[in-house]
Length: 212
Ligand code: B1M
Image 1 (cartoon, rainbow, N blue to C red):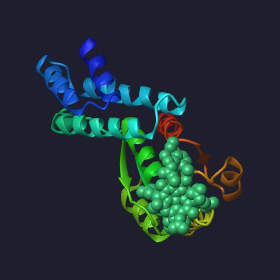
Image 2 (cartoon, rainbow, N blue to C red; image 1 turned 90 degrees about the vertical axis):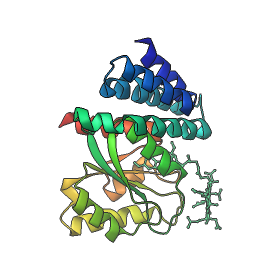
Image 3 (cartoon, rainbow, N blue to C red; image 1 turned 45 degrees about the horizontal axis):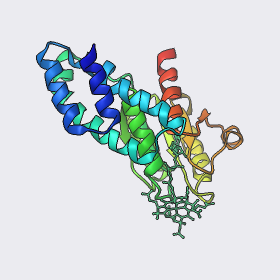
């Protein structure tokens, strides 16, 4: 349907006003909020994610598209609730204690939302106790930990140890990322997955929940 395609294109260009207008037109023409979300907004964010991974677009484009995604989902929110649409899963995300970098973490969050997850964002400089609390409270499928400093990446291990101590390690997938993090570090600390970028993180997260 071409209006959905136009929504996807407007989103990728970061044109919030066009996205909102096209969504209203689509709703008026009888397309459901779910269809608009899946085949317009999320399709657009997915395509942009692939371009980001291939270095065809960069951080600013993704941030602007995410703003358009937010504007679009604001319009759809009430309709989605009416239609009883559920998120595909829940993710708790945060940058670990001692670390204030959040640009990468925010991109991961946007890609996850773009993939249909409900995301609880704990922000930056998040101590392990706060992460344990959030997992107990929200029972997410996945926790995503970001670290940008060689001095804070070990805090990802501290979180995993705290999850073990709280008896939560088997209840949640632990995904890690951030510039200094590697696959061998992931293996070493016993995280479930390392992903090098935000688009891959969203793809892997989706594959986890769709398996179950
Ligand atoms: Co800082 N900083 N910084 N910094 N900073 C780096 C990381 C650094 C490499 C710069 C350098 O020296 N060349 C260096 C770290 C060196 C090291 O540890 N070996 C550094 C330093 C030293 C510091 C300070 C200590 C500086 C100082 O005060 N002396 C200080 C630390 C503060 C703290 O955190 N306690 C500091 C502060 C800052 C600013 C506040 C000024 C600012 C952060 C602003 C913000 O985030 N709101 C900042 C910035 C911007 C950077 C650089 C320039 C850019 C980081 C960034 O946003 N990249 C960075 C140098 C660089 O990388 N060129 C640097 C873009 C972002 C999209 O990439 O975050 O890697 P990234 O995310 C990617 C992937 O890694 C992955 O997906 C993202 C996109 O695809 N990913 C995940 C990230 N998290 C994930 C989680 C997942 C999955 C994937 O979970 C599943």
